[in-house]
Image 1 (spheres, one colour):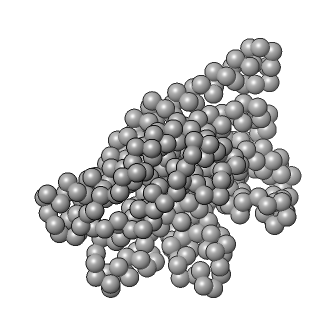
Image 2 (cartoon, helix red, strand yellow):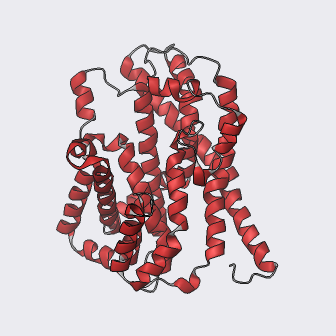
Image 3 (cartoon, helix red, strand yellow):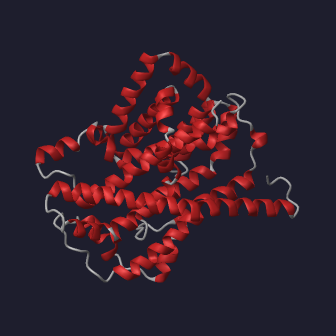
Length: 378
């Protein structure tokens, strides 16, 4: 059964997925690094779009979430160890893990919005797209609108301050459904599949529930899968190739299978990539490198912060780089690398000063409630 080391490399995968989303948003804002149409077409094609396929990375987030949150409950085999699960403590922990950091970054975003919304975006040699220009400037907000965006479980249709928050709403809802998933997993896989299809088709639960439950099923069969793939190199490589194909081929498949089909394919691809990593000791060792561990550790803060950097700081970075070069590729790579470095630095600070205290606060509240006469809270 996986140990803390396994959680480390899974966190690294989440960190790399977050970098992919940041890269996609930078590219949507400032284009690909080459001006040649053929070059752009090549970089926009599977599998070479792997490094900036943010949609596939979102699928990876949800599969990973189901896997990581479920792992510790399958220590004893295929049946979940529900005796170690505490519903109230789990819910409080998830709210403080996701919601409180989000509200703090949202508050910072609101302040920056008020400071910059009346000022036009800087003109740079690499012109910003309408997408990034209109992100704030074409969406005036009142204080009430800003407060409304703090209700993570019920966001407005148009999220302005932190537009990437739509995934956080789904993440929070799905993670709160974990107890139901564990109970159904105890009854059997057929129950889990039936519930998933019922919830998605009739109850209006997000389509990404399928991704989350795929992660749960991987957690349930973790030892058997990891052991088999460790012993069979050929099958492990085949799993990786199929996984990469499904993960990156959304643009090719969309016309044939539709949007949900693309999400399903990238989710299956994410699951297969995770299976490959679970069966590859060498890949696990690589992903456990200290530098990559830092990226994984700060991935949630990076996801929260990066749009603020793109909106408020990246234009100034590009303007400063223009004093050094006017070469398109030089400006693009310079702006991209500086943006990533600043996001990573601020994310590490946010992790230590915001995320860790937030999680600790949730634990203190659970302990406090327990001491007031609720011994079931652990």
